Each structure stands twice: as structure tokens, then as C-alpha cells.
Image (cartoon, rainbow, N blue to C red; front, side, top):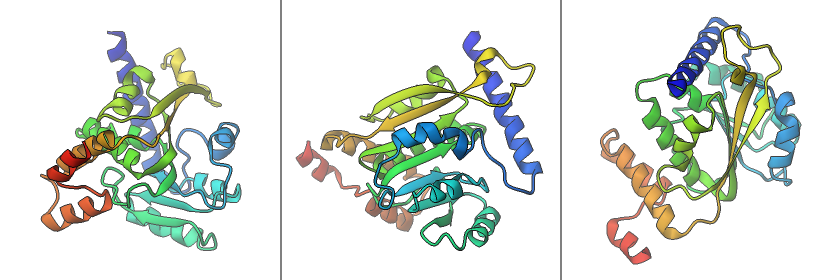
Length: 255
């Protein structure tokens, strides 16, 4: 009963935030700003700022990526589902020449395997969970992020969801990474009807090791199966190429 009530409270908070976001015309910051997270991020992000490749999921029109850029992490790729938001941010940030803005679905990521040092998810997967297909989309997104990370790469996810709700997504699909969960205090007072736990967000830090081939193959199979019914043959070929998906005979040899 307690878990159901907690999930309902989380869903209601997310829905209020989504409604507020849709009503605004200016920048909107999901959860916490770069300034709020800077003390934690400085300890987590790679020291080599000039060469660290960072992907920001569901970037929206938040100034987070601009602030990250100003801190010296200039190789940033932002992805958002809104074509209009992407157009606006490209125009706004045109002088930040090393930062890219792409329109796309965060649950259908098509980047080359092992190309990012860090993937940042600030409320993106929380927003996915508002949809009927949310749990499946989040599980697939997390598995794909694992594929996109280089060895020792980081997936940093800021969420409303406490560990009992979030960890199942982070540990599914044979994902072999080290997970650390921490509470991050909110700076605004909680809604009067929210429980004490709403004083905090949860930051999940997942570090991808140089996983054994058998584990990587299992994740690849999961990604391939997830897309086989949804994508046309040409798109499937692109997906297989992006994530280095091989056929069953090759997997048996690697096993």
C-alpha cells in the first residue's frame, strides 16, 4: 500500500511539472539547475573537460547545457523530441560551436556504440514514465545508454523516483555496471500535500565497466528484440550497424 501511494505521489508531481512546462514560453529548468548540482558533478565528471563527450537526454530549453559548456565541458550533444525547442536552442546557442542540438526520441537513440563518456538524464526518463509505454521505453533507454557509454563511462540520472522504483530499470537486461544512489536536497519547499520524501531528488550514478563480451551481447540482443517489430528493415539495418549487432553464429563464437 505504501509503495502504491508513493508511486501515485511521484506520478502527480511529474504531471504537475509537465503541465507547468507546457504553459511556459521561456526557459524551464527540470528539477535542479547546474549551479545546484555543480558540487556533485565536479566530483563525478571526467577531469579531461576538453575531450569528454557528453550526451544530455531530453535537454529541453533548460540553461543546464549552456552552464555545463561554460564550465569547460564543451563537447555536448543535446537531444529533445521537440523540433521547435531544438530550433530555438540552436539559434540561441549558435556561438557555442562545439555543442550540438538534435531532434529525436530519447527512447530511440541511434548513435555509434561506445561514443560517450557521460550521459545525463535530468527528468527525461521520469517524463517517459507518464506514457502507457513508459516502463518499456525506460528499460530500453537505459539499456541503450549502457551501449553508448565508453568503458568506465557514467550514466547520471536525476529522478523523483526512490531506489525501490528506479533500481529495477537500472539492473534489468543483464546490465553490468556499478550503481550508486544518493539523495539530493531540493531548494524549494515541497507541495503541501507531498510526503517528507519529496524534500529530496534522487541521483543515480551508473559506471559502465569494460564488460565481458557475453554481457554486452545480451544487451545487444535486448535492443534488437525491442526494435524488431517497430522499425522498417532499413532502420533495423541502421540500428544493427550503430550498436554493432551481430548474428547468432557470431555470438555463439564469442560465448
